[in-house]
Length: 78
Image (cartoon, rainbow, N blue to C red):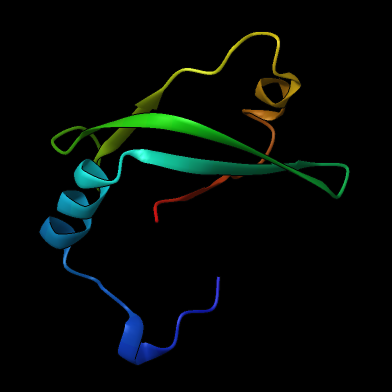
């Protein structure tokens, strides 16, 4: 995702605070070049992993969950 330098935020505490305040995010994945997006609530565990760990839940009826583990995903907090 292109972000001009003057809009970039690299401070982890600032990013984590934003994720906590705006925890309803968009998860984007793709399968066969076709993008899919789902709005989901996320919980942040800042102490797990190198950058923190995001936890969410997606309904089994949503076919997007089948893409997980095969490619990278993008989570957009706005």
